[in-house]
Length: 354
Image (cartoon, rainbow, N blue to C red; front, side, top):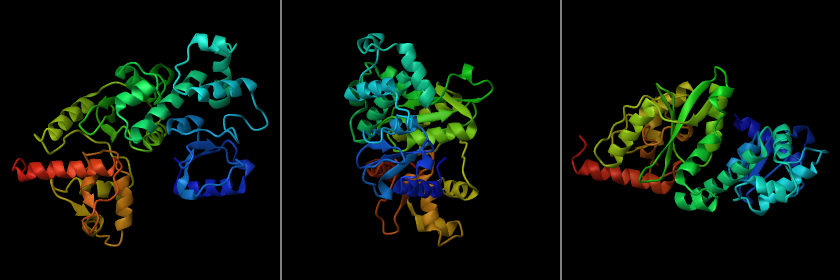
């Protein structure tokens, strides 16, 4: 996990073009959509426009493309013509689904390409191309495009193929992981867009809207922290939360019983517990929560803990607003927050909720 202190350190290394940080991180620039090496000669972006990643795949899945100036896919002082040719081919048509014929057209042996990419980046060329396509799809979804449009524009002919590809990027097959923890991931449709649920056979570990920015990194941190593989599938907690969400959106239920595994600091967990106490159809301010927690000046810390919530809707961070009554940031987007509050208010006024 890249901490706030590490981000500041990495940003300074970027400003200084410090070569000793080569291979330690990549920086994605939100204003240009490219990701770079620490020594990139391009004009330096502002700190708030930078996102830091430890691997190429993380940057690709966050929808960034490789910088043409610093060429982050080329090892320092060791530029591979083969890798550069393949990367250029992908950038010419990033939506392409690669076949054996495509390799033959470039006079490249598919197994050689796989070996070179695996050695250099820890991922095969096909995995690179897939991550690039999925990153583009995620960017389209975040921009407001329909899921079906993102699916077809990135070369997926079926929704199941798109969902499977999204799930495949999350972890290795269980047969390759020995006794590692296995988590299952399911795509859940909702009136506000698709959601991703991750769980084992006992607990739900994450429930988020698929287009939430930073979701890929959140999943990566979960994998690393738990030393787990995340593969497509369903479990009892996922089946339960799917039923409960359907009832919630239908206005038939306002509570959730799916068991949650809340991973966070003592303070974060105390905030999340208080969030669950906010009555359906009502709101609280960050200051209100800070006072309840007997830390009246810690409303900013409460806001940070609110943003770290990994269970959309179930832990109702959407019910937190500014002290003046205005809506404020929500990981799923302000429009979703507004919809959820109006949905709950309507059903409360109808007398369907005690």
